[in-house]
Length: 199
Image: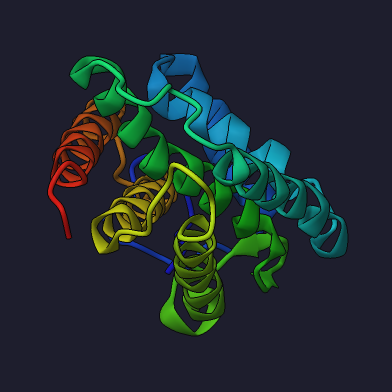
């Protein structure tokens, strides 16, 4: 659930719109840090009408499909380090897709509600598209389909949602954002490492 960003709040209260979020972002920006930056990005994304927000999301999905269509983009026998960073692209691609799909969700006075009812359809869409993308790769020369690749995609989505929900918390701090981002990177690296297994 989204929350009002308000300094000194003793308890969480539901956010009542972009205006309140903007005031909270301005207050956090006065302190600087990663939290202020991410809240500003959130406000920029929320300026898009819901219908238009599908355009960049669909373009990104098209880019994912195109990259998946490339036959052995790293060559037939890539170095393990290069292959690891290529596998790390899985959570990155679908983390960005998650971020781009957030503004398409139903809003309450202009801001996203971080609940199952609001975001469940987007989560289903992302996981389904990740599965379709993996199936598509099974027909591309030099590529293969992997359940672990799909898991890495899902991890990118999960970490993005956790950070996005946290920055709407009135008690969020830049240190808390950094910790969650580092934890997310760690989980994505683990997921990227698992993709080396033949599953």
